[in-house]
Image (cartoon, rainbow, N blue to C red; front, side):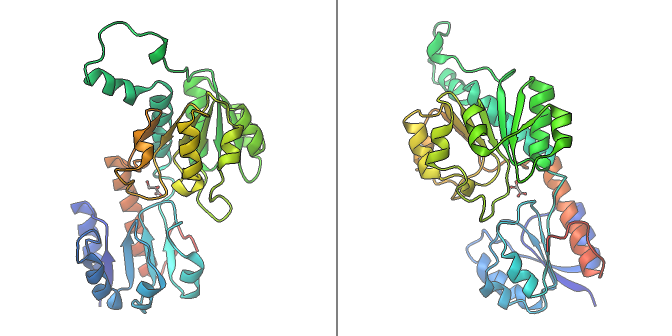
Length: 319
Ligand code: DGY
């Protein structure tokens, strides 16, 4: 008999067909009004779950006694209680690697957009304000040749470092759990403690995973260490930054600006005070959101799920 899988993220027709050939699929649209009720109905028979952005708490897991694997369509697994899953004997898989380059592109896009005031000035032109050549009040800051500080030197941090060093001739500082000599050799990068990085960098790019150790890693004290002209880019998780402290630092222009793809609350409420600041570029968690990369992530998750249900070891086991 085919195993049963609850799918809560839309797949392309080709991937859905591949999945349906091997398992029985129940689709649940968790964004629908009755989404949670449908999920609750589907969980008791489920051997596998495939999706993302859903907090599977103990109450939901209790409903799924046969569950063997959760294939998350994400690299980040901060949404899951990994210890609880392990205790229950449920395997968790994720989708690293396939999104590395795209997420690094997002980091550079935010860095450039913020430094060169692309969004603010494009809106200014659209609103009919461009009536003479620009003066210093509308100038941005250079990116090329400046110093970037990368917090977290995993796969995505390294992809940011490559772009910064090779593409923009930037000096690379980095902070991570341990120095990485191979990265230093490749990008002429310099390892330093977080305080030194914050004090010396013109651009600070956060790429660390969210954990107890990195929650609110950047708070009022850390923001105060940054140069007044520095820009913060967050492509990690919103909770890595103390958002209230960041708001104050931006309002009081203690730092020059922020490019933010991730927030404490997502979707970011439309009345968030961050959205009233011209020195903020806010994007809706688009880190990996390209057609190509989201398809690659979904394919990776399907492969992980099917191999786990076939009793093999998937390529990307988290626990
Ligand atoms: C992930 O996969 O964790 C990303 O944040 C999604 O864009």
